[in-house]
Structure formats: C-alpha cells, structure tokens
Image (cartoon, each protein chain N blue to C red):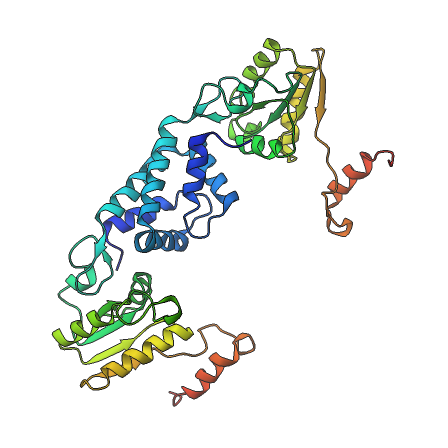
Length: 198
Length: 198
C-alpha cells in the first residue's frame, strides 16, 4: 500500500527540508491535511513568494528582496567596520550581539576539494567592496572550523597590503561552559588568548 | 534586526509544521533560498494541490483524493474483516503487516475533556458502515493509550448486541524488547496474554 498520489507527492516534497526524513514527512503531511489546511496554503504561498522575489543584496550579498538589505540600507550604522561571515544566518547571529557596523556575506568557505576557490565564494567582490568604501577595521567572523579558519587566513593575507586593521573573533570557553567539558583545542585558545583580569 | 519581510513570512509559515521551532524554520528557509529554490517551488505546488484536492474516502474516512481510497476500492480484499484505527497514518502502519481486510478511520479518540464525544469522532458513521456490510470480525486497533482503550471499550459495547466477533490487538513485549526495559503495565499484559508454547 502507498498513500494516494497527491499525498505521496506532498510527502516526497516535504523531504527536501533539512532534517526531515520519511516518518516526519508523513506526520507533517497528514497533520496539515487533517488539522491545518489554511496554514498549509499560507505556507505554499509564502514559499512561492519568497522563491520568486528574494535575491541578494548588491552590497553585502546577504539574502534580500530589496536591492539593499536592511543592514546596508540603514544610514546610522558604523561605516568604519566590516564584518565578514559565511552565510546569511550568521548575519542574524551577529546582529543579536548589538554589532552596529556593516557586513559582507561570503558564499560559504574555501573548500578546494569541493571545487570552491576564492572566486566561487565571492572574494573578488569582497575586495571590490572594501576598495570602494573607507573601512578601518575588517572583522573575520567565519566559522571556527578548519575551512572557516583557512578562509579567514586567506582573506587576511589578501588584505595585508592594505592599510586596515584585520581582526578575528575570539575563541575560548563559551559562557556557562565548564572547563572539564570543553575540548582541548578550545582550551588552548582560551589560555593563549588570556587577558588581564579587570 | 530581523530578516526581510518575505523571509520572515516564510520562517513563520514553516513553523506550522509539527516539530519545527524557530531555529529549524530559519535553517529551512535559508537553505531553500540558497540551495534548493526549485525544490521549494515544487513543495509549494504539492501543498497547494494536496490541500485543494485531498478529501476523505466516503467508505472508510481515510484521506484520499478519490471518492474511494485504494484500500476500499481494491476488489480482492477480505470483506469479512474490518479494522478500526484512529488516524490515516495507522492505516499505513497496519498495511505494512500484510493485513488484507477493510478499514474504518475514526477522527481520533474519545476525549470528553476536549469535547470529543462519539459523534465528533465518527462512531455513528462506523455503525452505519458495519450495518451496511457483512463483516464477521471487527478488529479494534486504536492506540494503546488511556483514550485509545476507552474508545475501544466504547465501540465494543456498542457492537456487543450484533452478531460479530469483536477483537482487540494484542499488548505485550515488543519484538527485540528486553524485559528489564519494558514497563510494568506492558509486562502485566504480556503475562496475562500468555499462550501455549508452540
């Protein structure tokens, strides 16, 4: 037995969502059909509209349906600071810290094995963006993974000749973290990056 | 900061899916926008089509876009057996056992506190269905929860006066289950329901 064709098609389509397997997709499809058809129609509409209209901000390359995203369009942000991240979700994460400079969003990180070189992740555009503006500090906020570190190093090298402060976000023990649960690599960073007690 | 309006709308709409919270919805929305716009459009279309066209089978009340679901329309199934379940997903589960009779799908279980009495879950239709056909055995396959048991008892009472075998699916230790991990209630059922060793 299988579900009727339209239900099967819905279940298969739901499986493109990250983290949704066969069982979850079945549960989602039947729950929508039995309890929330209006919500499902709204979701269909939201998907359609977002896919048709959301493009990329022409300055920072984050996802945006306007030519400029809200962070690039805001007139009252610090034009001396540029924060470089790997994805639009990272912009959201950093915004929550109260950071008030500008952003540049790479298309992921350098990954030669996957054929992702500097051009593929948008580094030439980043250089153009930096040359066209008057930043004083560039903050490298790529992920703290091997690829993220490599990407940060690569960008730092490219920018070395320019008259800019290039900084990297700090690595260390997370707030609320217990030492015995923190891995050795993080702990080395935390020790090496120690600061005078205030 | 918030996402741009269309992205926010998409994130909010994704949260109607069961098991999807704020973080998952953000990840889903951005992954679809960045990596799989075609899949997202296909999902929008599948949602629209399913919500517009899927109704209920007029015999067994499972979800179906045809007047009769595949199980009710099949001519070569056992017309003497009727299996009563709580939801369309249960039909799918029981089909996997190789069961080859007919089905009736309730709209959930009796739950007086939520205002769900016999009429709300479709018991009058069930009685009509049984009276119109010539079943010999009715299998109560409602869930093994307090409400599921109550629903099974209620239906058994109603059917007591009719000349029918009314049975309940067995409760016991699941296959591969270790005794020390099985709860006391299940174990009592397993003991009480013991059978001659073959």
